[in-house]
Length: 307
Image (cartoon, rainbow, N blue to C red):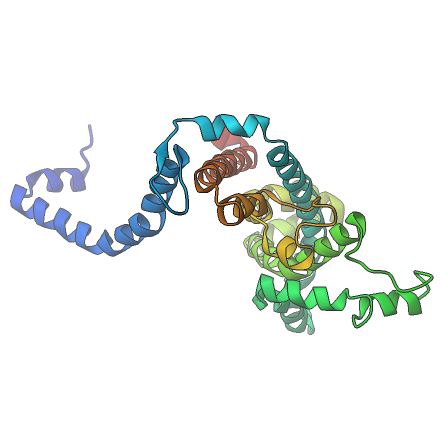
């Protein structure tokens, strides 16, 4: 029978010494714990408390129990916002990965121009989302913009088209802007996974005669599963919390069809001043994000870890 030496030494330490070591550890983590309490635990707890009240902007809050939560079931605008957010999340996530994966595989190769490609692909990431939305709003302007005259010059349209006037055009314009802005960030995450693959495995698969698609399917994808899960969680979470692009580029239109769930929460909380109902909506969105994140991480785990 073997005895862990560290365990024995830990038991032989005097109680006062162990208390001092525990106190030192608490002192070291205290600043981080204070930040977590101030900027996460307390705000979430206060939001939960607000969600059980009718909370006016001025006046005394009134306890109403779960009435704010039951109100959602009869709120068609809430379900419309939730449905649009789900549709947007699916589309933008698929499109981002469609571009980010080839970009990551391109810049992972050892070529002369690779540093230039990396800079070019990543550069839009440093632009703020609000600034990018304003830039693309100007570029999409039918009179003073760039896209509409370019499309007319290339013969894609018979005249100048307002890209933000109809739902389909505005939706895909926003998708293009988000992909231009975010794909470089997703590329960097995927690149770290690709660079972590041992070169010996890649060379062995080439010697065995595996073609490029076979190496990608049976070698690359399984080995970057965790990196892929991280990138997917970031993409889905960011898409569900989308607000700036819809507020700046379309103001929720056309015909209020581009109101995301966060946009709806902002309207309820700071336009209609239904602060209690807005808090309840926020808690529901938080729960949805937690469920989706846990589900994604579980589905993309290795088979051995699922057991």
